[in-house]
Length: 62
Image (cartoon, rainbow, N blue to C red):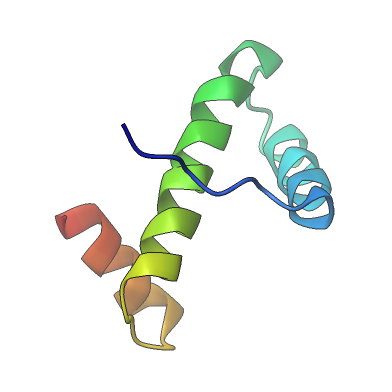
């Protein structure tokens, strides 16, 4: 079993505000937070380009 990184509070607060602005139903926040944790974990473990779009493409591809 592996452990994902915790989302820092400052990032989580901004992320929840973003989800609210996008009118994502709060009932879906848990799933959105889970995928944010996966992405942060991926970015921490693997060398990825500084280009944000390329980083997301690599994450989705894996």
